[in-house]
Length: 430
Image (cartoon, rainbow, N blue to C red):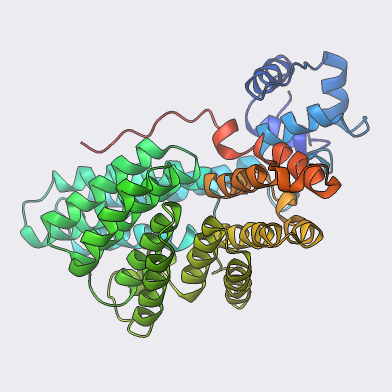
């Protein structure tokens, strides 16, 4: 495709950015369709009509392929290109910024404060950007930053500088653990969490260690191993600093315990998390950096709602999910964790299903089904899969609402991040 002329559609704009010729477009469309289990192809003439805007809305199977491939709704893809700046200009600006930072760091003959400050700022910005940035967009930058930190560790023997760099390495590996899990790569998530824990142990940093333990717990219970997750959390809590670190550990401990049906223990852990919130806010690592490192009342309510859904307590789950949504809504858009708010919305739908209110569940989930594939993280997909299992029980046999919800869940999860990303496994740190 000619990269020198103005594209007709957003789809053509993205194809030009990716340097796809028409033959490449047709070949990669077929490969994406095969990965999704869709036995469809696109002809040369049809591809041209999509790219040039001379075609109507594609059939549903083709829509699913295009949305999974490019991560944007089909009506956007077939609409006009974005005119603020071209994709090529955006890529040049981002690449230039990254190159400037790397060159400035490499140019220092010794690690001076400015080099360390650049890396620390990059790590902290990534922690805060996690709430609002799709996982795939964060992945390459985090890996590059991690590798830069490793390179600087080889350049200094000063204990203070090494300690700073190990803390940064732990922070970035922890973020990579969260991003890996969002992409459905639980093995990589666990390895990155172990690396973060190791760095925290090297420098005796209790807040980093507590955060890394909570990441291990999360990866374990989400991958169906709650009996492995619960002891990790229980052992970590007494060693963790008071406040935010313990809030998170108590909350994820409750999630793991809910999966084994320990109702009384779940309630005790959630109450303990609530009590620790009154002492939170002063951690120089978790609270000062914030973002993915923080853990506030909204996240505690999110965990509580999910735990009660798991226990089958629809009434309590609905109260906690509604509280989480209200707390998330009070946070400014540029600071709100979109994935968490989405999870609470699914939990609300699940809670209403448990209460037999299928109309209410449909209402709660309507906005969920509209999110783009780039936002369909593994946690959201697993929540919906669990709900689909409930909808398939004898209790809802023959219910039209249950059938419609089940079909919507199948369509949603068929183009989730984990299903559509051909991401190579993230190399664990050495």
